[in-house]
Image 1: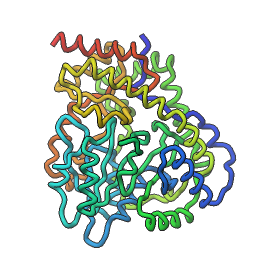
Image 2: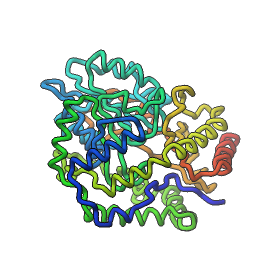
Image 3: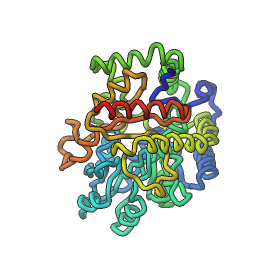
Length: 411
């Protein structure tokens, strides 16, 4: 049986980033990117920034006023997102997620709001936050800036509108694991016209990405591309992953994490002060044409998993209607016997992940911001991620579901 990797690379045109770039003035690049984004998503005021996380920094910096420095956020994220809040001179306030869900709840958000609350970062995962419209209305009423983290949800829609429409700021990411990819890069939607003009003016002073910025990323991309190719993955990469997991070789297991070594940032590094160049924007523009078709295939795979696995009460509980236009980046399940089931699936030739995002409230460097985060801790302990990417066949998913059924029949 062919084993499919848990993740794939979406970047198609990596070598054009190493070509000589057309030298355009920053203003022209910003306008070109804005036009590209508006044509695809009917969204204006999107700035081409260095990375999605830098958009969190800029958003928090603009949201913080006087004593209002508290930024509400889920701890279920990458650690550098928390760093961006700190670099903006904000104070992270972790809100717990709902039981049997990846998402924050309005109830938990309300419990953390006070006179010092400046903003809420609302991260959307494989599905849209089930209370998104209520949370958006609540933030407007309380004059709390809402920042949508759409790093893995660029193609998600609510009421036929891109999710950025339901925010004051929204961030997008174009790393090479993202659906729209260009090795490096991000986007920042800004609702307020005055703030948009201010940030637009600031970006005019930034450097564009240049040839040397892509060398390391391109080498890494080529290595990952080789490791994820069918024959190489089945006869080399997966056996190593499998051996590492079954024998708990932590050094090798770290390679499967998207943020393996948490550290504390005190300042924004100079290489964040970049905007996308012409070749990067072209890559993103061309990737947009595949977004909707690939999303529909991921949705098909997501629903197939759910039809087979819902009876075991390990599937996260979401409304069909609200989730119809989510990104479906993966299919998470919550199991009490995580290591045992993971081992069973690995032995049977399935590449699955025990890791998606970490519980940042449990990291020592952020420990002082930890307040009663029970559900998130429990969630991470139980979470297994099943792949949904568009290259998977229906037959493979059915076999994976049947293998999970066999495991539970034995139990």
